[in-house]
Picture 1 (cartoon, rainbow, N blue to C red):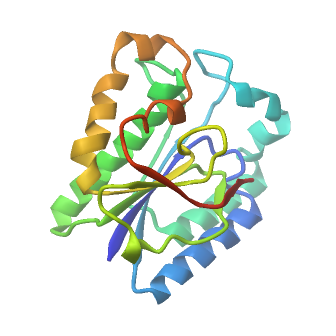
Picture 2 (cartoon, helix red, strand yellow; picture 1 turned 90 degrees about the vertical axis):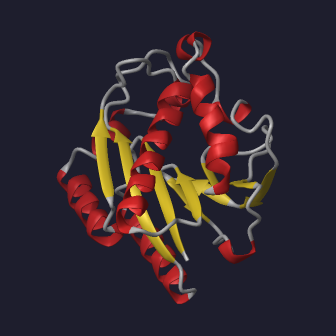
Length: 217
């Protein structure tokens, strides 16, 4: 089994030593299960460029904003790249169309999905599952991909929403019947101009299971 692991968001704590340990353990675990993980990464480097004031900004200070762009941060990022061996790495500051969270977050994931689909087509194979994760998230338990249903979205647990947008897993079957519908709607004018958290939008009409405990670093 080969799965695509899509890391998207702001780097913030991606380069902490603990994240290196986390990803090393995750990769080793799945190799023991005969599961190969291909990583794809897209990072929004400058969180100061934004179309709105996000609720999470109260947690961010100058230290967290600058840590990635430090000797230690960049050295650790280089270590992470060597460890993950990502198929694609993209860094950006701002989307031209909109930086509203629903658009920018979903657009980032969609870009990685398209790169993953292009890569599998070019190399004549198919990913079974696609995994979306924030760069600052760690799983406290590893998903058992061999027992997941194709028509269900599996996410990390979230107490105030149907499912979590921070970590979720979907089979390639869901790209056509679920994901592509989300992408088409998010280009509508309302969603380009108004703040809405993705977890209250993208899971409305789909079966979800909150399966995994996770933590944000």
